Image 1 (cartoon, rainbow, N blue to C red):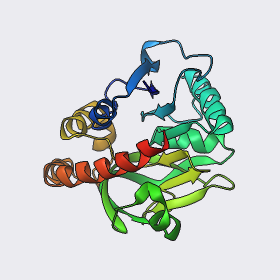
Image 2 (cartoon, rainbow, N blue to C red; image 1 turned 30 degrees about the vertical axis):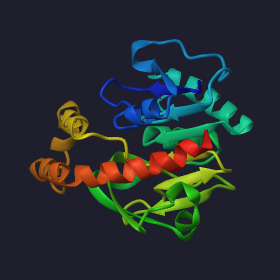
Image 3 (tube, rainbow, N blue to C red; image 1 turned 180 degrees about the vertical axis):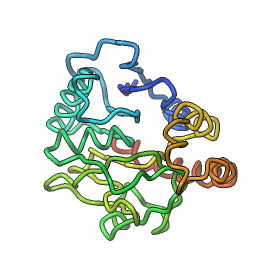
Image 4 (cartoon, one colour; image 1 turned 180 degrees about the horizontal axis):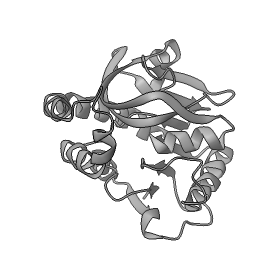
Amino acid sequence: MKKILVLQNIGCENLGTMEAAIKNRNMEYHYIQLYNNDKVPENLSGYSALIILGGPMNVYETKQHPYLLDEERLIHEAINKKIATLGLCLGSQLIAKTAGAKVFAGKKKEIGWYSVSLTCDGMSDALFAGFEKDITVFQWHGDTFDIPSGAKRLAESELFPNQAFKIGEKIIGLQFHLEVTEEAAFEWMEEYKEELNSLKDYIDPKKMRNDTTKKIENLKKSAQQFYNNFFKLI
């Protein structure tokens, strides 16, 4: 049975809808709860894929969160050995950093529901087979990244031109959250309430809640299509 290693940076950001997708394909997954001081494996031996989840920390906060360096070590191995890897939000930033690209603060935070557009490379890539050019997704980030050298840029948005990329055939970074559930979105709004309160000039939490209820089902459909495509790489 194929086994997936999942690096979890904070309790409230988990596999979401991807959990059932993994189980439905008769694969196993193993969480490493980094926020609970779980020990990071020395290598990816025995694992068929690596998933790096989101979190509120920044990739450059390695003194406060030394396990970020352990994550980079495993990502480096995955890139070298061409092991299927998916980074979500913080995870995508860690992949970009590990691959030598710059990670930095964006002009303003992108939190809530936004449209992202597939690039020409994205439209022709098997990872987004079955997708329309424009997808409405859930976002929660302030940092962004340059596309690593030699990688393909697959998606973009008005605020952040680099939303998804692919290194080779199996290493993928998504800045947005396809995996989020309605419950998780509401939990994040509570968990990160102070951050939302500091952005009231352009983010309305009430509208964000209403948008979540309206748009979550379409997101689930997009997510399932993406999982169908991604899990073929494992």
